[in-house]
Image 1 (spheres, rainbow, N blue to C red):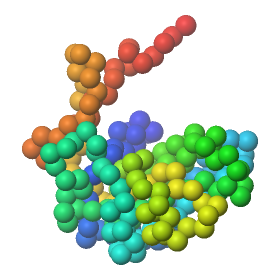
Image 2: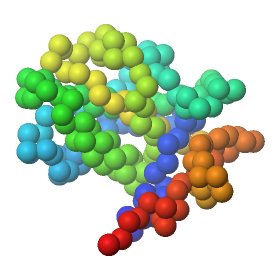
Image 3: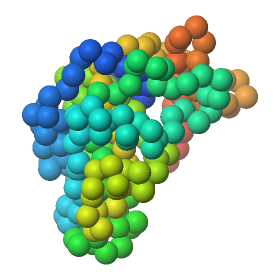
Image 4: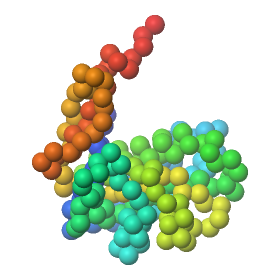
Length: 192
């Protein structure tokens, strides 16, 4: 059921580096995006799938993780992602790529759900250096990195917890468990 898949697809920040993801599996997840909605059906996104250990390490160095958690290094040493998919806008297809950011979100969620279904997980990273990504992956000028998906076999526990009484939904970590607060349905649904 879709809701079960959504519940298993969390933002993971610690991975078992001994469990690799094959390039074919990454390609299969990207293939799922071809069936996702696309603004004006332009399909202007390109996806750079990375499993090379050296490139993965360089990409990790160009990302920032869990900005609200300042007392811990994430991912922990020895628990880095083993693969990445970088979602890029192709300005040769659409010169005004910023108008299509919703497509980035749709495709990112599609990939993350495919990963969860296969027993993997990851983290969508919007806080990254586009220059480091472009240089590391030797992307041509027309490909603009929009979102980085870090992927692997999660080796941490992420628990959903209710919204704080004061409405706070800040995530936090205690005793190695990552807690994520979600707003209650009554606080987000407007019915007419």
